[in-house]
Structure formats: structure tokens, C-alpha cells
Length: 252
Image (cartoon, rainbow, N blue to C red; front, side, top):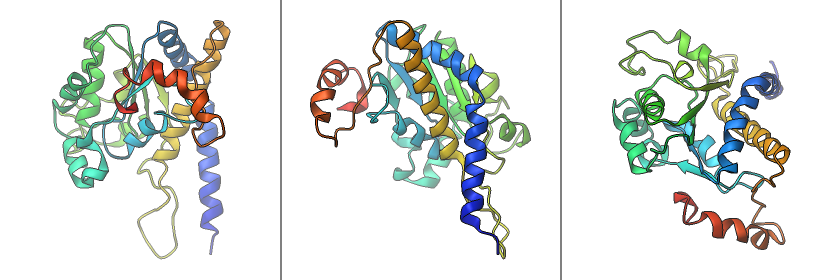
């Protein structure tokens, strides 16, 4: 029998190397993020639906992560409030627009990062289209291969049939394999070994690091959190806490 653990590790390694190869798109997106931080703006991040929320949590209050990240974590699409419920809500046209309203995402020129593994559901498309209408700069982390294979009219699609990667300013391909799960196990039909969280989190962390490089090139020290569990962590983070706790909804 094949060593499924080594197969999975190899698959993850191959995919993250493909994402790292998206240097041009990541670099352009990093310029937008760095410019926003230079202007003392927050960088908004949303993962419209299910496990895509995990990439948003990945960059909020994260050791080694940028501090001015405004995580949009709507409870309606968070699986802890009901996994099937999340799936239903992310398919509701108009819902994403109300989420943007609730978080006050309406300032022209600000940056919104939209992380969605498949890039086809109603909430995702509504957020992308509405954000551009409001004048925001939009960055997507998603998979075009998945979007291209799901047929028009599928229940998981936005009624318009639009794809996320075609409706943003900059698109970073997360190279998610079609179907998410990637490992075949002898004796069963359905694959296991999901990839979307690896893909989304690695891609967004690459983006944050490149943005830090851009800030350094501008002569700006990147505002980065230290682990609060490390000796001196609380003290190191104090100035950033004072600056952002009243501006970032989910830091409090």
C-alpha cells in the first residue's frame, strides 16, 4: 500500500512551490498593501464562506503578521455556528453587501483582500463587485482551475455566473486542485487530504511578507506582532495594541 502520508506531504510541497512561483502577482498585490499601511490605513481581509475564514484568522493578531489587518469575520459564514448553515448563507445573493456595510468597508482607495478557495459563490462575487463599485482596490486569493470547471447554473454559483479571479484588480492563484481533496486511498472512492487551507494560508502569508519587504524599501519599519507567549511579547506588542485596538474590530 502506498504511503499516503508522504504522498500528502509531497502534494503540499508541490502546491506551495507553485504558489511561491506567483511572484509577479504577489509583488503587485504587496505594493497595494504596503502603500495602504504607509498611508496609515487598515488592510481589510474577508474569506466569504466556510473554511476560507481560516485564512482571515491566520493574519489577525498573528505572531509574525502585520498588525493593521482588519479581519472581516462574519458569524453567518463561520462553520462554528453551523457548517451547513454557512454553506447556505454563502450562496445568498446580497448577503455579502450587507457584511461590507456592517464593517464600514466603503472608503475609496482602501485595500480589500478576498480569500475564497473556489471563487464562485454568491457572497464572494457580491463582495468583489460591490467593493470595486465603492472604489476599493481588490486582491483575490483563489483558484481559477476550480472556477473554470464548475458549470454555469450550479447551485454553488452566483446567479451571474461570474468568477472571483475575473472581478478583482489583482488575482493570486492559490493552485487549489479541483475538488480540494488530493489523496486517493485504496478501498474508497472519495479522496481525502484537503488542500484549501494550506493554499489560502500560505498564499496570504507570502503576500504579507512581501508587503513587509516593500515597506522596508520605503524606509518604514513594518508593524509586525510578536508572539504574546514569548518572553517580552506583551511589552513588544504594547505600542501596536494602543494604535490598533480601537480601529480593528476583532482585536478587542
